[in-house]
Image (cartoon, rainbow, N blue to C red):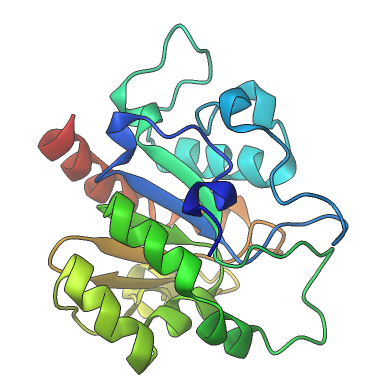
Length: 218
């Protein structure tokens, strides 16, 4: 297996262990290109302006909507910014996953993400696809995750909460799962048509989770 760090796009600090893992499906772009755009010594923290692209920028916008401050200037960052790691479950590159049995791909190719989770033991994981949550809950993978992050509770469908229904906004699947040592969320991919107003509905949930993380770690 390749070094697990080869599928990490951001710098790994000591604060990155027991930190926050942001995880998408796979890398965009042309399949023949190298996985990472940056050499190991070039990588920076996730909110650094070097990663000025749509995926990162929309996530930073969601943090703003959740009232979770995050610095983007190198001379202002602290432990929180260093705690965030960005990766993808699959190490493949493609413009999209149209015509692909995505869930089967995830359930078949999980060794690298499992190793990443085992080494980093994140306190918060944010997936950007419901299929990532479904994959990690498949029997073979979940049994191994339980050994790393502890026993799990059932998946919660946050989009079915009353405060979401009352909004009358178009609902997208938002899932939450608690384990003994980690809380996992899955949100729609940032390329989806989900509105900022819809994402803001989850402000109380996300702000509480991140504040608790900061209080216990930073």
